[in-house]
Image 1 (cartoon, rainbow, N blue to C red):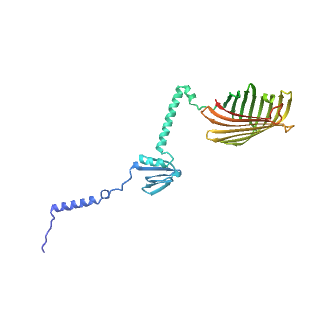
Image 2: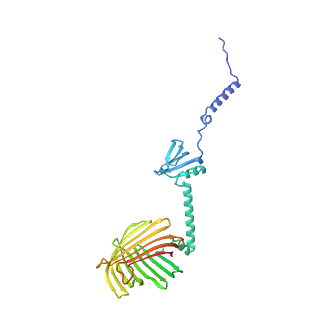
Image 3: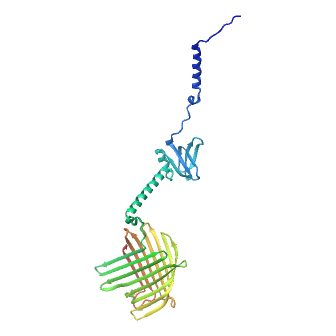
Length: 357
């Protein structure tokens, strides 16, 4: 039997080794396949929800009610705007889009504003520490409890009739808590063809206080009216004030009271009577800058109901500046038992200015 030995050449063995390593190199997964592309960190949107969850992903779409983002694991996710309590992103374009639809500021802006507020507070504290006066300047100004108002009107006529008429009124009040005090006075003087056509002074001092949850008041009134032969009238009243409307644009209240009235007339008549008081006070904003004020007071003699007096006033006030306003007012005074040869009713129409200070 013939026996032969076959020897592969050395070059052939090297070739097989090269082919083996070549196939091994390209079959490795880390080199054969590229990993899936991940979105850039800059374009990621992070949403903080009101239930404590956090959702992140790429922004897909926005609307007035919701936004849609795409998450690597959950796919596309829709989130309602009402569920978002915070958000953040590093992309300026995405921040602009989200700011237009989400009312909540992004977390970066809130953090920056908080740092700025903290820095401003630190600067203010440093100024206060070095300058004691700065502490007083930084305190919020307390509202002035005092209110002061002056009304003035003047009319002059020359020609067929020579007359002049001046009206002056002022009001001072102070309110602190449930307490309020007020002093108001009105005066009128007129001359027509050398004869006195008006001579009136009327003043009221009023105090209000809440007692046992009831708004009570006490007021004193003093009057002089020469045309009605009244030397003076002094009255004291106490009662309860009942507010019906207490809004900013509408106010309505009623006063129910009783007291006494002392009157002296030029005719020699003197009276001291127990009286009752019923008053209506209303205020209404009829335009953005115009206010209508109304007040009607009814005084009646408790022993003789037919002897009564009515005082009514209505005014329109329109501010021109912070402290100056234009005022148109009508005042009517009626006395059912006039003394002497005088008419029971007097009506006055006033146009003038109001100064608040």
